[in-house]
Length: 109
Image (tube, rainbow, N blue to C red):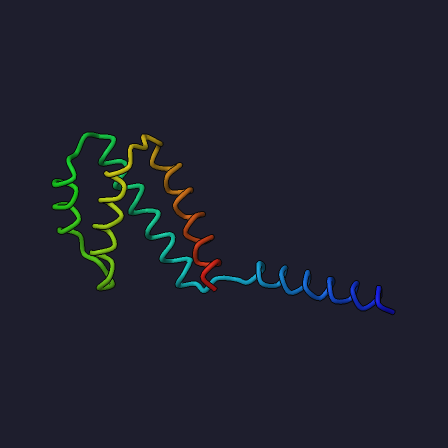
């Protein structure tokens, strides 16, 4: 009887853990991750083409953003991209950023 109880308890814990990992993200979370990944890729393109951080910031100031938080977030992502010594291609950076963002959003739930 004791072994049956332990077995059932472990299956219940495994089922709960797999359900927690399988949770879907809200569409807004996916949008934010996609937008941030695109911003990071654009910043990497500018960095690799030799554009200064100052010029990249000025370019961001001219963009029209649909949400109020986007301008400051774009500036922050651009600054972090320029601070990094990474020379990876923008598409690889976009993919990496997106996957890490989704992983972060899932972990916060």
